[in-house]
Image (cartoon, rainbow, N blue to C red; front, side, top):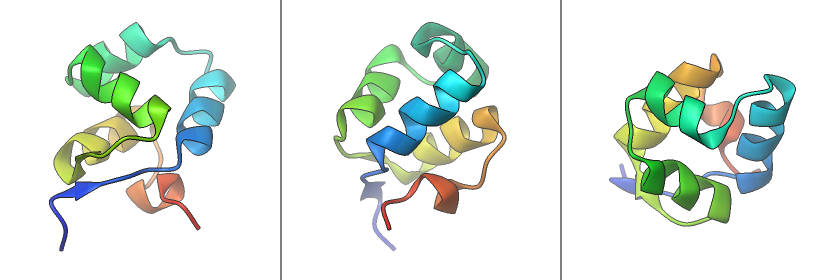
Length: 68
C-alpha cells in the first residue's frame, strides 16, 4: 500500500463547499497542517494518514475522495 497518495482535488473542494468549511477550519478539525490541505486542494501527493484524517474530519470515507 502506498504511503503517499493523490486525492481528487475537486471532490475535496466540493465537500468543503458543501459543508461551508474553510481550509483553515478543516486543518484544525483534521489536526493537520495548512500545507497538507493546500496540497490536497492542489492535487499534490499527501501522506495516506493525512488524507484519512481529512476524510474523517469531513465525515466521508477516504475512498470517496479518491480519483475514479
